[in-house]
Length: 347
Ligand SMILES: [Zn+2]
Ligand SMILES: [Zn+2]
Image (cartoon, rainbow, N blue to C red; front, side, top):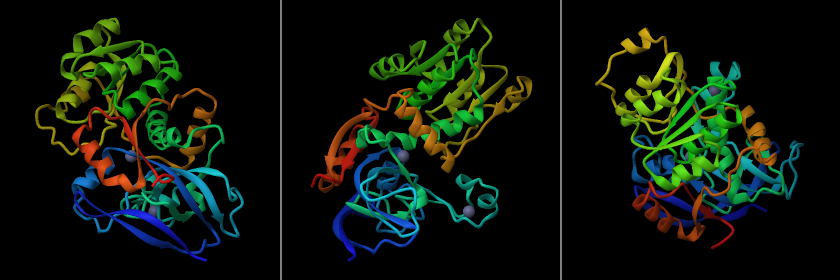
């Protein structure tokens, strides 16, 4: 029997329709997942506000998603009914040159589960089983939604190759900034310098391993970063805030031979500075996009082992039927929220 699933569909910017959808019988290499929790992030806020030009409505958002396997297809061997899972939302085509080179996060035809492909603001989803990763039973499914974000952060830090004893500055202490701070501290970086204008986020950063938490804008942090790094500058600067002014500040505080992660997704034109410092200090700019499928299992393990703490990021929870209210609240206070969770188990 096919399933029916209550679904929150975005039919136009800032407009939801709560509908019943039919979920097909499980395909042999797919699973049907009964969604537990979906965390809402800035990407969702952009979709909600209509910032993506080529969206095809209705859009079912939700890409930071956990749940429990309701049915597994005949050829699925790594999951069975009842298993808790997290979904890797980076959908790749499998046949382009990037996929052929095992770089699925750079797929030429990539789509995001929850934007180009229907996501998890629903009771049930039908996804290829390769995108569903088993979770340990002892991680709460709302906190576990953070593991998707952690995997993108881990992907960036693996590319940066942070070594013990290196100095790392993390600009911005929202969800991704806090996870970057934790992961850098775990890598043995010292000092890890967290920068934010929000006191409670700095307190969280300190709890999560930052050696210094500076309540100052990135543009005004240079002298303190220089002081804390013995006037050398930082080995690594990770920009989770984005924008020209922050990027300029990042370049200024990197030591010669250092690395820059422009981690934040930003479309702002940078017209106020030249590339000269990149030449003069031989700075490496290391981009990173989304996550690779192989980032998921190690990220789950980091949380399972208690090395990365994903508790305390959920600022509020709304039942699926209150999705419009959740987005309204988020838009009204996006800086005061780390993650809102939509609970598909509640109506
Ligand atoms: Zn997200
Ligand atoms: Zn591809």
